[in-house]
Length: 372
Figure 1 (tube, rainbow, N blue to C red):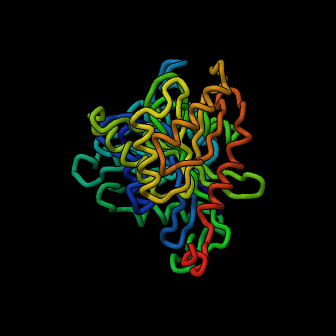
Figure 2 (cartoon, rainbow, N blue to C red; figure 1 turned 45 degrees about the vertical axis):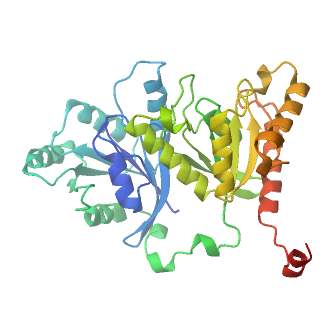
Figure 3 (tube, helix red, strand yellow; figure 1 turned 180 degrees about the vertical axis):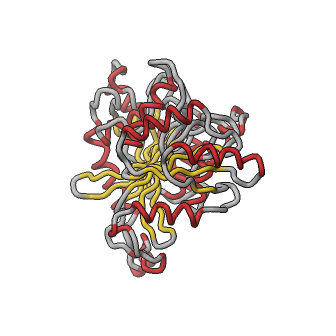
């Protein structure tokens, strides 16, 4: 994409709803609870002859240093720094709050083009917010309703005004379908139970802090997608939310996260199942492996936290035996022992993934199948 656009604003102003509206799909989890988005999410958008990369960021709020909220805010600032253009979104019903004014000053210091959008402009209550927004100094605010789709055309026209020339003029009919590209990215989903180390593994592979990590279980909510080049091969890595047994999933947010993770598995070509060596192949691990098999995906098992294992040879031998016993449909599946925290054994993961992908794509001639 020719340029990158990030949606910024305080919590619960409708950033993820706008992200879903512009991408044309329910890509980001949306709920009335403030602070649903944690990791920033990205997608390619082609709309009104404009092509760009769109980032959905977490709400910028007052936080305490060192806690989870602080880590979320740091990731949001990284996303904003990567963007070429910012959509500063405010809630028209709330008007311009002191927090909005503080964010406006912070974003202005970045020196990037800013498109001011006033969301939730579908009621009379938003009139005061529109009037107040005009005094922020970002030009005429764009009135939108991300929920109902009104004002999206005006928003795109505002983006066209600040977009580079190479981003304009692509019609949707001229965009190449991913399925027709001879070298489309290899799609890999990283999945497993909560706190198995999936996000740490994603960060280790990318060599940067793309996904928020920490001791708390269930930090990841939205599936986090990242593009990556590995030895000249373009990779699409997706870090998914931890999957627990259905009986333990009660909150609506966790249900949406689990559904998002399952969708990511269905869209992947290879799935990396991350397990904890202290509690390997529990019921949920087996159910995830069974889901991967039912969906017809290739799979590699990554045994994380290997630096904490004392008798490595014995455990690895036992794990291979357990796979043959508990997952006969996955007999012979590669098991890579690694430590995402220290980097030990991580270099063995991608060769195993590429080998499984090669087997997954292997074509067998009809006469050989008939002979067999």
